[in-house]
Length: 274
Ligand code: ADP
Image 1 (cartoon, rainbow, N blue to C red):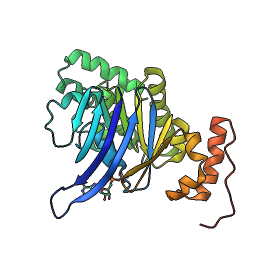
Image 2 (cartoon, protein in one colour):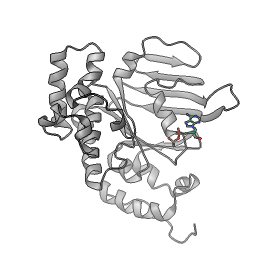
Image 3 (tube, rainbow, N blue to C red):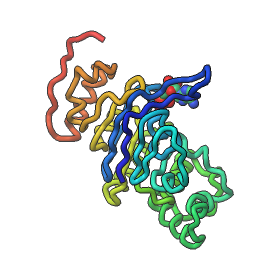
Image 4 (cartoon, helix red, strand yellow):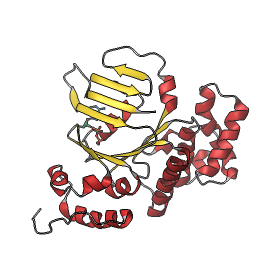
């Protein structure tokens, strides 16, 4: 399922004295089956963009196309439930949204709310708990008796239980230790590879963007200023510097990208001051 943002503008608290423009003429095309990363500084508009991917926010002007749904600014929308099922969002610290008595009930909550039979939802929860790397024995526990990392996995299983076509990950490894971070990222990559799950990763980590994504978009001051493959983007030093992605970090990063992709990128200049 493709998602397109066409000339999307968004303002918070529109028409009030607190109006805050967050997006300016954003154009993006997430192609079905791809892995796309979105990077940018804090406040550049990443979270605002991602909430357009399943119509949690509707554009102030412009159009969002989610599969066969066309969401235009100012037009009423019916039955967004279906869109929300198809595009699952793993928000930052998703474990804060756990609330049921048991892990099993928490994972089953979304599918049952969507009308799935209890036995089917239970079976799905049992499969998913293994997929997210936890033993089946946690299903009967209270989510609040688990460690932070385990709670995160339960929350992720809850999003996957809806069987979305697209998964949107907002800094999914924030606050985890390096090993936990890697495990979660590798798990999402395996899902993408094995099941063709379209994946959108919002991240501060250029390493993760380069390691996992087919395409990377850079947000800067409410605009999507560049999109390309990691190789294209990270070898274009001038453009990256224009968007204040600093040179020393880039040089270290370039080495990592080269290792990952197994080919040299254009040499960066080390002489300039920053
Ligand atoms: P990022 O995810 O890249 O950190 P955001 O999308 O959260 O960026 O924010 C983009 C801009 O919108 C920022 O200037 C931010 O202050 C503003 N903003 C975000 N959320 C709100 C909100 N609920 N009300 C008003 N302004 C907001």
